[in-house]
Image 1: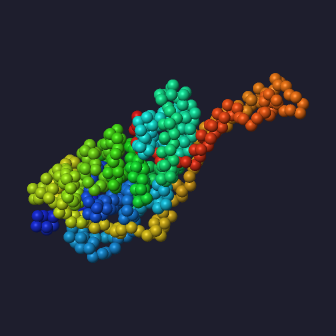
Image 2 (image 1 turned 120 degrees about the vertical axis):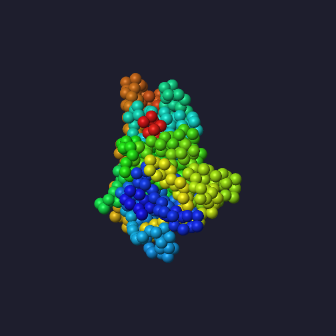
Image 3 (image 1 turned 90 degrees about the vertical axis):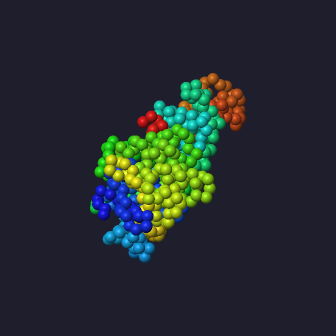
Amino acid sequence: MVDETSIFIGASRKPDDSYQRAEELLLRYGNRHGLVTGATGTGKTVSLQILAEGFSNAGVPVFCADIKGDLSGISMMGEAKDFLVKRAEQVKLDPYQFQEFPVIFWDLFGEQGHPIRATISEMGPLLLSRLMNLTEAQEGVMNIAFRIADEEGLLLLDLKDLQALLANMAERADELSARYGNVTKPSVGAIQRTLLVLEQQGAANFFGEPALRIADIMRTTRDGRGAISVLAADKLMMNPRLYATFLLWLMSELFEELPEVGDLDQPKLVFFFDEAHLLFEDAPKVLIDRVEQVVRLIRSKGVGVYFVTQNPLDIPEKVLAQLGNRVQHALRAYTPREQQAVRTAAETFRPNPDFDCATAITQLATGEALVSMLEDKGVPAMVQRTLIRPPSSRLGPITPDERRKIIAESPVAGQYDQVVDRESAFEILQKKTKEAQDAEAQAQQQNSGGSRWTIPGFDDVLGTGNRRSSNRQTVAEAAIKSVVRSVGSSVGRAIVRGILGSLARGR
């Protein structure tokens, strides 16, 4: 029924609801991307789970986001429950074997998995601006900041590096405006305030080192199975812009680092983007174009991208056209927009004369879907009404103790736990400020010698000796202290870096 070149999805049904045939995803077309859609509670997570299991068993590493915690059960052996055994019989899955899968848990906040970090420079100005929802003028200042960092050799690794650079730019606003265009203190201040908000939302945990190594999400086990990287995203969903930015950054890093390989017998890595609508919600056209470009080109790197969302209308048309393997669970059609979504979903399938696709979408039961996978020569198969197979791993979340045990035994345990803070923009600018302060003090001391007179009993009547006649500070001292305060105030702040920055820089 199923061989090593395919993943068993389930069994299609004839019009009389009897068994028709096995529905499979051919591994050689696994990098042609895919789409899993359906209303809440219709079985999208289980479809994601069985696809991840199939890719893992084929030796393909998987990266997926766990929005509700349900997907964590893939790390544990499944149990023989009545409804699962019955479904296995219906789809002729024999033998129905239970299995646990090699899982690596990740978490941007470092609470339910290994910490994930990226540097400010890796994120780039485009994605940072998207994350921070900057205006066009503020985005221009952000681009200038990255230009200055490149020209002056300032590493932008964590939040305090960017904070220090922005403070330095505010002090040099007139000089920089003459060279790069308008750099105003209000724009810089607005960016600083946005960074503070991001820090309070937990984004500070994301920026810094050690940064995630792509090789660590592309691991295979000794028995040849692909590791499944599960990102804990329940807390992350409280900041959906950070979630979307991180996923786009990760995809762009893969695009940069992986070589061209063309079509392989199976993918090198598969991504599942749950709640995919967050990637495109309120996104500017330039960002959507970048996503479409990466999705289109990353296929030749051997990477498959699968979007999981409720509504096919959530995906821009240019991106939707790139998705060859499709699983459509039930949709409800009560409102005009929902009715339009049903029609859109039906029109994307190759029609089946045995049933009306639009009608079937509204009548599908839980665990049932319309399935169309790519066949020979990459042609979409005729859509089939399909019962999805039961998973081999556990349904539902694991316990906190089980999660801690898996994290402790992880192949990357200890590699990302401790933050590394090497010399970068913050330290360099702090050093320059100190040198300027020392130089000013030395110049003041030199200017004070030999040209003054005093009256016995009175120190420095004219205020030009070793002591001043008042507590007022000089203009130079005030300027230096202003720089120190500006740079010093950035200590300890951190910000999440933006995605697709490398592409934005013309790579």
